[in-house]
Image (cartoon, rainbow, N blue to C red):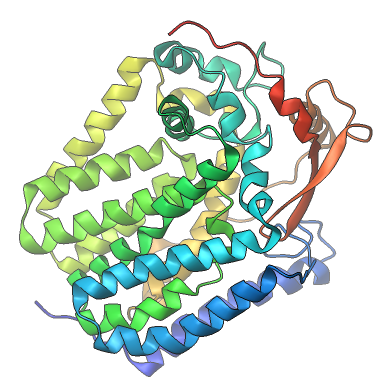
Length: 406
């Protein structure tokens, strides 16, 4: 099988495309005087650097990884390298999260807007699935909070599962999320080796470990989505190159479940097509579609129809799709060869910007996030990946509704 070789020209094109997109996201809103409702575009964050005693271990670990990983990536055996990649990723993410102590990892999962609050009030899973869509609107009785309302029930089910096995402390929930998220690098390296070469996977490893995304991987449920998607694509690559039906079914199950983790992850279909195109084999497709169908059928029979949420969520999902499409432009170009003009002709232009929220929608969102609380009177500041928002006080988390009988 022909394996494309990474060239300095291709790498420069990929890096330049990424830089141009980021610069455009930062400069255009200011030039056009357009309020894009983020404080530090293209990131939903604030510039708020901090330095404390616990920052020193993170700096030391970061320097050690910068010095050691390039050498290890060249000399370690393949299986040892995968173990080192996982351990290094886990250590780096934890070091960054712990710069503010255990609270740095637990804080996000303590927020009532996150999945944990609603997950710990779920009794019957079947009843939850049947009533999921009707509890999405802001004005519905016992409505879901922000993250649960904005995602399919697969994300909530993950946190319900943690609650069922006894992982209820926000810090340990964060540790579990970091551990699962850290396996993503193993899946990515397997994919690179399968579709490209082992040399390509080895050269990419230090960059993936130390990628800026580590800032978010310890404080966000999306990090688990990343791991599920990465393993789905890895299994698809294995199935396409080695003709294994079981791997194709597993890929379909994982990628199909991703669509029930986040509505925007339907765009993983583009990456799945890219994997099959690079592998030059479409044989796994029927098996993968069968696996995805099983997941969809299970949720539908359980009471949740994926398409049934469209009238409720309206344009919100489409707005998030556009953002993720921009990210995919970069993802498809790295670290393999990038032909921007050919890709643009085949895929088409990215949809234009969406209309901004109305004052009424923002007001409903504010009421939604605080329920009956006065946000000016009963809020505390929380940070996530550098972004600060004002949210209901953490002490209200103990006021959970009683769990219904299973």
